[in-house]
Amino acid sequence: MKLANPKNPNTRGLMRERHRRDRAQTPPLRTRYPDVASLRLNFVFSDSGPFTPAPQVNEMHPPATAFFVFACPYDDCDGEFNLAGPVDAMVRAGRDRCEGQLRCGGQRSGNKGKYSCTLTLDFTAQALRAE
Ligand SMILES: [Zn+2]
Image 1 (cartoon, helix red, strand yellow):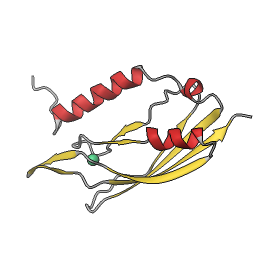
Image 2: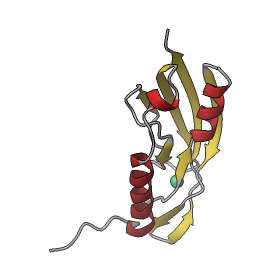
Image 3: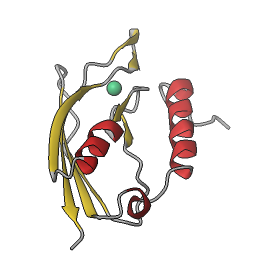
Image 4: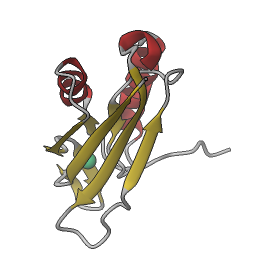
């Protein structure tokens, strides 16, 4: 039997494993940010290639794990986007909204071997405060 063999089994798998471990140690949103009723993360991706990933919306509620590291949507990339800093700064400053841009620093593995991912994430984070 041939095992499932994703294009980039090692680094991508290691990242997923690390995320799973980190997530397990992260408190829920309601503990970390008690006055936040919901958090909405809007992702818009841009890249020079022909297959740019679709936009994403992540709606997080108080029971959700307050984990803000997202794997690059390219499944052959080992990169990630870490929004923990901007989200934390927004909530602590009492702001309801922040936006920014992050670049993937991962490596992709294509037919021609490894190459740097050029995906750019434009994100908007919106916090809805509890009454
Ligand atoms: Zn990437």
